[in-house]
Image 1 (cartoon, rainbow, N blue to C red):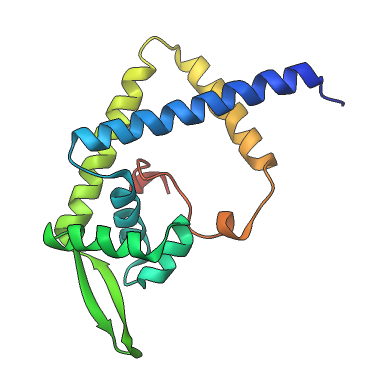
Image 2: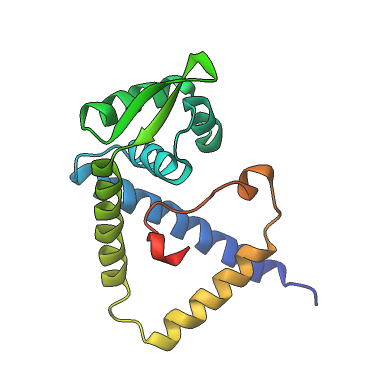
Length: 162
């Protein structure tokens, strides 16, 4: 079945707008809580991956290694991350989340889920399920890339959803 060009353009426009607004809303919420969004993304990667090299996080998040270093220093000062030497390569270091870091990420996830649920207060459960089904189908149609095949998830998804 061929897709109508104007329908595709309308959907693309709406999706781009939604993505942009969601990112802005998420960033504002994190900043109100005293966090840089990149800092939270880095903490999430550290929690998900266990002991991990900073370069792996930089590659995964597509950010400069220096950004990882700066944010890890802040996370380390907050007792959310510990930095240790890599026993296999003494020139390298490994990042690992502390119990406090894991708890803080869970707290931030819970706050985000609550905020998102408030956005859907006026929606009927069937509408939410339908949109979820359609977006899941759309996501499955996106081309795979090496980055998408790695651990990828939005930081606000709870551990129970995996």
